[in-house]
Image 1 (cartoon, rainbow, N blue to C red):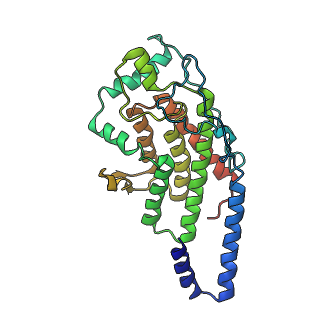
Image 2: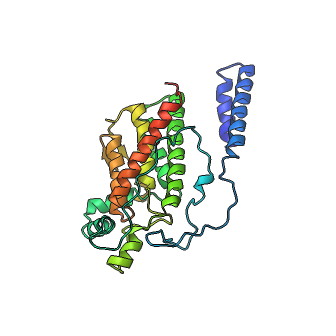
Image 3: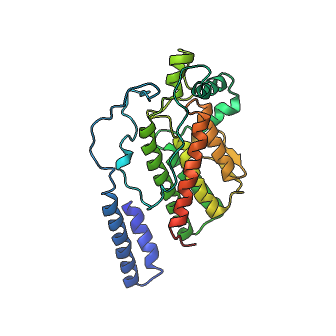
Length: 299
């Protein structure tokens, strides 16, 4: 990092006078310092006890021996005032193990689909499961990076695009995880093994947090709302995100089409109910639109 900084400074030193260069460096460091100081108070550094999931019919039962993911999201500060306006979720159907109930039918849809997955549906689920360390947020930054490269955006426009996608990712992530630990909804794998088929496993591993809402669906709703605002929806792009892992590239004609695959991938992976994906996508769309309506971005 130091070598990169020195290299950039040497380049800029040939473009501007010394006083302008030093004044600009000082300004950048002042901005960075203020952001860092403000971020340090956002709640993510809070020390909390290990999360203990509530117990009861239809409530989430941890799916892994590892700690629950982000259970104290309610302590994290949002960046954009009003990004959560109009975002309350319509609850899932009432929990029931009765085969004639709406809840049973919702889960049975996941089970039935898992038994007849096509090669393309499996490929979709594997592609968008996101490798460890990326999470959906990292995957979206990678997609945006490809758009920036393909569109040949200048540095200022690229920085703005990254800021908008970063805001959308952060706000949607905080809000969806807050909701997860309010609803604490049981995962398909737990219900299916308990009620339908004790030998069943989800096609991809089930993450260790409650089912509702869906992180991938909510985040893609917020992020692609931003990207459509910047680049328009009909944007042909080929994703090479996981070429290095041996996955084939995936080509799309719009951001909406990418989002639909991401949403469906969580259903085919056996992680989410269809209703969850649809409601979560609407949540993300609303968050993205709230940000656009509140923050005055430079064009």
